Length: 510
Image (cartoon, helix red, strand yellow):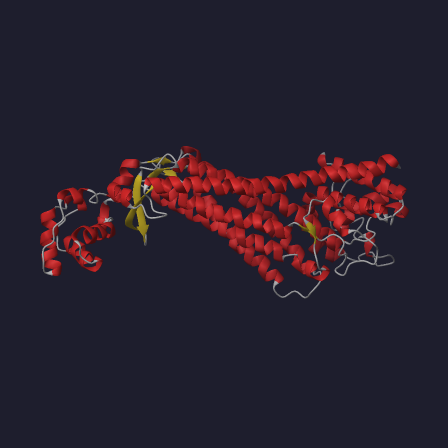
């Protein structure tokens, strides 16, 4: 099929006969132009949806078998043409639904091709096509996320002992390890993975058969079409289903916005940690570029582009939300405007996730600089206060005053490595009015960041044994989610095979 010249034919043949030559011209040029381009992604889905509906009509003895066979063969022909890039949507036919129908009418005549939409409408077809598209993209994104999380976990397992500064207000605070930092990211992405795969279950309910928005008097079997298309079940309420379009897209955009936030924050931290001032990380040359005017620079362009692209997701959510918020019940053409937003957002995430994984996997960790930075600004002060409280048998608030006095009054010049029992006793006398005793051996356990990290054994803390538990927990949770993803993907594959099998039966018997 070839795109017809708009000057030769401006109208959609399904809109009616006897209208003026220019009927619909402005509507097509303004409202439908992008639909045709975007709907190219739906051709395969559209044919499968129609095939499932035809198989159901034949089993329900609603439609003559000879007609069903011709239409099934015609739809398979369209699938093959589309796979070769030869099924080109005609702009004047407005969308994929009318293009597929018109192809069959031209091939078999209206007395046969005109039966294609018996019992379904463009409305429930686009709802169904969109959900099939969404669930396939959700599966892909979830598989990419599992790869990302697994990669982060593998990197974390190399760095149980790599001490680094933690930050509060972007000021050096309690020390952690690079493994602890990375597993924190892995848990964020696990949350995203769990939430996105849960949304799959909302998407995976079949709208086909609600017709415009109030069903049909034909004795259709929506359970059968749902099963043939790999859905968990048909949607329960026709008007509710019509009003879900845009809403399920908005909810997916909301989940992807949180994922985008986690990606954006991670990229931002890597950019900061890799600056000359911080020097904690070095970004692999694969992901940097040179300065055109400054030959000394290696710029984190890839990370900055990822960071900028992630900013598009919240705006995509808001765009769909604002399109939907004021619409009356039933189908409204406004919802078509959610399609390009959905497509572009999913494409952005799908292209970005492997890049993010590559960036993290190839980072060079500057261990010496990390440990040095972990000890500046008296970062272990909270731990020192806790230890002095416990070792000397005084309240935490008293210990807090002693530690603050050691820092503010110059007892310590650069770090707690200078701390001695005598300094503690003298600072205590000044801070709380009496001396306290802490031995040199006791001090040795908490005067440096590396040793303090080892003491942070509370559940969820950065001590190596705790992080090992976290990595094991992440692996277990990831394994469970991967099984769920695999089962969902298997069900979709089985449904395609079932539909093909049922269509073959009808064709061979007739």
